[in-house]
Length: 307
Image (cartoon, one colour):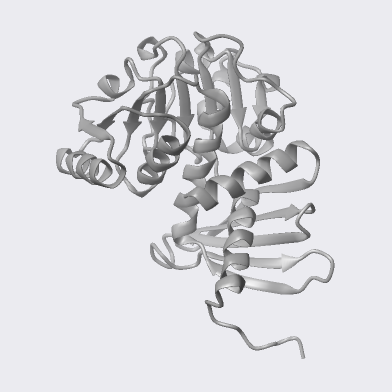
């Protein structure tokens, strides 16, 4: 996670300085699923990458490959299986958003969801803030109880299951919504003053985790890619349709990390990070993994197929 946090912070800072290009996700229908293609260019590193993934048609773990290239020559540097890396980079993005947007004394974390994504969210946030208490809700009691035991054992921070989404949100300094809900699970009336929200679960048209009041309560909203948010983030698109939000209020996280914008002006401000999972995060982590593999002499060297 430390490597992931470092790589993601670096890539957003450099994007804010103009050295990075993110290509928003393209989706294409398959007979029994969806094909997804993303790409990003890290000019400051001289690397670019393309990820091709799929859902449903090939099974849960199949069809998630990332190719890393050298920008100057087009040379293929590495092929990376990115199923596990996806949760790591998404967690790291929320960690960096929390570092730059949450109050420095934030100590209570509310977690909505108890799956693979939620686990890396907690790990990353605990790296950037001194979290003393974690409240967790997901609909299946056994899942949230197991999640709390695992988090407590792994991180040494007390994690306790609660019995509703509302209980997880109320009085929390930082909130993570990592669900697949199609109806809001974070309501504005539940939010404490000064709360920071990382909304990561809804990046499909039919999913929504935040009600309009929650979005309206935010004095500052950032997304990992505001352009991509326009057609993937129902959390933001619905308030825009209702006239409760305008897209010019949705800023790039890169501008916050680079110091071009300040997310928080007062302790009581509510801030929101809308995470979609973008290609430049994948390129940053793949580049870090590739460099470490070369240093440690691990991995499989593929034959040169150019000739």
